[in-house]
Image 1 (cartoon, rainbow, N blue to C red):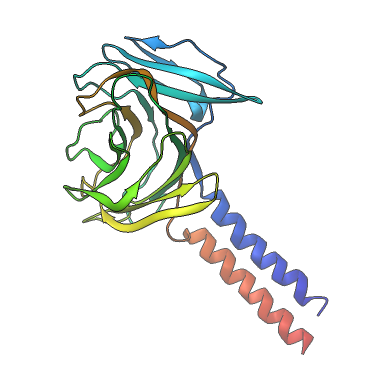
Image 2 (image 1 turned 180 degrees about the vertical axis):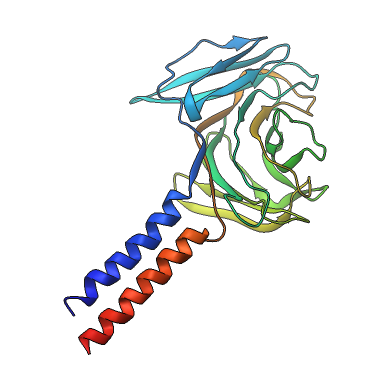
Length: 277
């Protein structure tokens, strides 16, 4: 028994270390280190650094600001006071997601979203997407498209079809965690899914998986948040708050080195069991 227990721990540790080491951070930003900023208007630029760096691209009368929520917590807020559709507001580029059956072909992550109450005007929508580098259109360069509509209903694309989640309307002032997972390992049709959880109550409101990506087999290179795009409403008040954005890539199957270590650990376990007997 004394020999068996260490071998179990060794095998588990070897296998677990390989799976953890296969994870790569694509984008991670909670805005706390950026500090509060006055509304940025009508410009392009970059904020953050490393895997927390993102670009912003503001159309006419669109604004971006980093808001102090107290206790060292900051979040980004977006507004759109222009009825014309415009470009992505926040975009982060990345590399290294595999589009084959091996490598880091699973992209997953989450972000916190709070629809803000408005003092004037009408609410715009929010589009979250995973696309090829610098692509933010609705075309085949997008893999994932997830929508919070102006009426706070939730939409998504399944292939080229846009559908709303039935009987689900979000509430202004309530924070939600949106989880996204996309599998890019198929050579024919990639798939994705999402979940929505009320962060105050930890209640999961919906979860869907097995959706077809809009671009059947793209090479993902960016994620983006676009507030007010494809929408004719406008308000000078921020209507979107985002926080705790974290996305990683992992391997759907163990790498060959993982198999070798697991086989070796299994052999050690068998030897230990025989000695114990």
